[in-house]
Amino acid sequence: MSNVILFQKVKEVTEQPGEYYAEAIHDGVKIYQKYSDNRYHEQEVIPFADVLIRADDGEWDDNRSLALRLLAEWGGIPENHSPHNLVVLYRWLVADAYIADLVAINGIEEFHGQNGGMVTNRKIERLAIANNIEGTGIERYGIEEGAKLIVKFYQQMLEISNGNIVGISAFGRDTLNELHEGFLQAYITEGLPNETHH
Image (cartoon, rainbow, N blue to C red; front, side, top):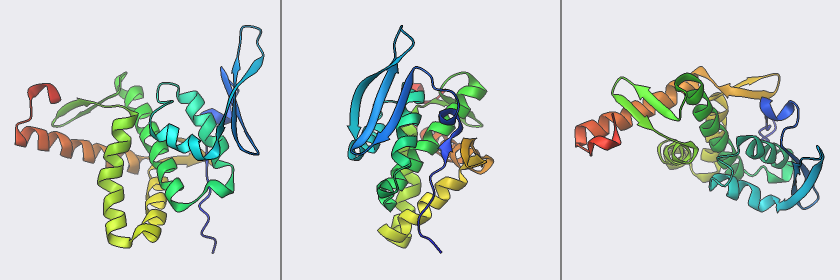
């Protein structure tokens, strides 16, 4: 049995190109942007080692299409698939899919539950997921095995159809909704300022 965890492309990336186009080359991912002449012009080459770091730091959180294209190209290179890198990648994909789901449901990046609501964003979700899911997995199973199990867990949180990620799965939505309900309950119980929740 192979230990390689396959990378599934996000459906949006496999459809028509938009304002941006990205392609993996020998030393990184090259970004092109479509200009008014309706042609793509090279913008920059991002070294493979920097793509995931910059995505995790939130550099492209406001440009989802570009981020997904960059990560799809990065993920297409098997040498990038260390267990640690895959944890970061799938954490990013889960947070992105969950935020997209919240926006589709609520019209904004906000969670609404039984204990109230809270504003969130992709970076907040990545931090919450890392702190509340990854810490437990690594504590129980160690760094190497824990990372592999975390990636499998994250994959279950994504809805995958024909090898493409199409959104958050019901399991992923339930898991993250429960996490947010817990945050809100803690805020209410511990008496944090009213502006934290509503």
